[in-house]
Length: 469
Ligand SMILES: [Cu+2]
Image (tube, rainbow, N blue to C red):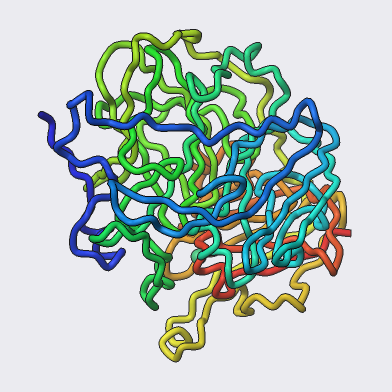
């Protein structure tokens, strides 16, 4: 039997644990076909006929390997929420909050005005509802939604308040793409969680956890630990969301098979890009095609030097094979906005070590910790801006609400393949230049956010807000 490394010592050190698995699948279980659990998809919530969407934030529970029931939260279910399918046009949403604290629903990746964005200025109180009448108008994309209450986002998302969105134009079959949800079109929410020896899911960030972001010792995919994804022996589409609070993944298959990148945060690339390693930071989404023809049980791994298992796949010969070849292209290159910008801004994602040691936090952007009552930037509606974003101390995934951007350069060089398409979140290792057009309005009362998507950093103040008018 093949032995795999399921935990990196570096990750263990970061997580403050001395042992454990970054996957719930015991190493000894590999290969014994009777012992595995089949990975389930989140239920579908298809809004295309009704134009309506109903979510309810509620409490739930989750247990691992027969361990204790962990209190969780979710939308319409115990943990996480349904996969919402939407198309362009009006969408009347209703979000109820049955929890005993305020939550919000930020539509991460939807291009909607500030008043519909679901950020910290749009809390839904205990027992209340929020009913934004939205207009969806954008390219097909894999987006997501999650709570975004300032100071509470990390714990609320960790607890389960997140879900995936498919924006579709109904033409993916014409594009030659898999479209059968849960069969050859899989939605995979990657999250690491810290599970103690008694099976309890822990969230108790120390100062070091806040510095690096809170890391877990076990991989959950769609809230499940150790499950195996059954796939047909053909081309399968994987829509990956890094829904982790802080962990970035460097994904590869243990047998070296390629991942064909077809879409990033904001939509399709012009053509597939073959990658042996694919990086995905918190908040980012990618869509990849993987060829599972032939036998075997490839494992999606993360980490370069000491890889650990993220998700095992099992080829099921009884499943229908619909797609056997890769599509060649999806359309024109994304619009190049360079040269159309009217201004350049400098943003520094700051961590002040001294300030943190004094217990003062020290997380800020341009040395200003987030303040709900301060507008940091004012952007003119319909204009293009270039933002030069710098990270301090560690790499920070930078997210902008209300716009999609192109990455112009990373550390002075051509962007990595993962960053060539439309993006709303980018991992800034040292410096990234991004360029974007602001077509959605946001008022002083309901401004847009820009922030680090390491949720502990965001909550601690690495966030700013801007108007578009
Ligand atoms: Cu950060």
